[in-house]
Image (cartoon, rainbow, N blue to C red; front, side, top):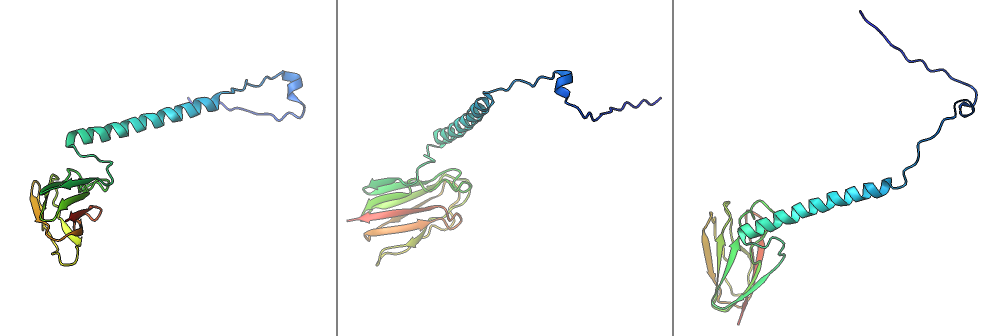
Length: 170
């Protein structure tokens, strides 16, 4: 057995209000306030989660992820870290990205990332030798002793967003 129910609408050509006394729904004046409040709450929760996860990464690795450029002045030896995750995140870099050593001092780079990296000079002062670590697997170190004063710029051949500077004084 099949039953079909249909709705029928009739066009009425006279004012309905006078016959039916229809009322409109009351307007809600504060709808926009509630919408803006909900948007701000969602943005706040998102920011808290993002900053919280950044803090957890920094606590776990000891690497400041929002450091654009930091500088270390050293005597005989300065250490530079290739932090965990830098091969997969363009927001990370050598830490510190800029170091200063005295003439005759050394810089030691350590790869704390599971993926390979290089430390390859892109510019050196006149009279200085260029340097290239070659492939540095996880936990590998590479040391360069600097004997000519000036600025040495370097990068990772595999990850072009990674770059740093060694300034040699004296």
